[in-house]
Length: 136
Image 1: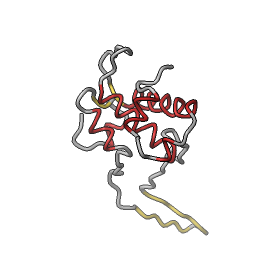
Image 2: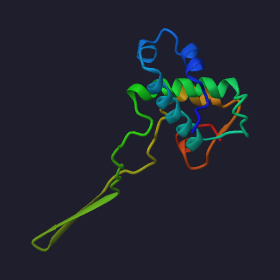
Image 3: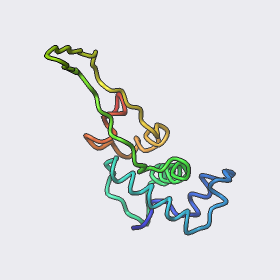
């Protein structure tokens, strides 16, 4: 898989950030590939000519690659369980409790990237679309 941004392009965007500039070239490429996978999963892109990738996609990719160093884009997280009610019984007596429910509010983990990419692509329905309020 070819990343949307080259190492040289990402070096310009992430210039002065030691966490990026100190990485060996193969590691930078790996982070850029993870960034492309993330973009492909969560955003609907226009048809891309890999010889002429839009600047905002390059910038978003470089920023996601940088973020991937400290916050893995595909980290394993436990699934949240929402308990709406609970019943407990003992010695023939039962008690139940209904908890106040409501929607779980999630936050876009990379709002800067979403803003950059919003000029050339949209969020996939059913992905982070549900966590980016006001975006479609």
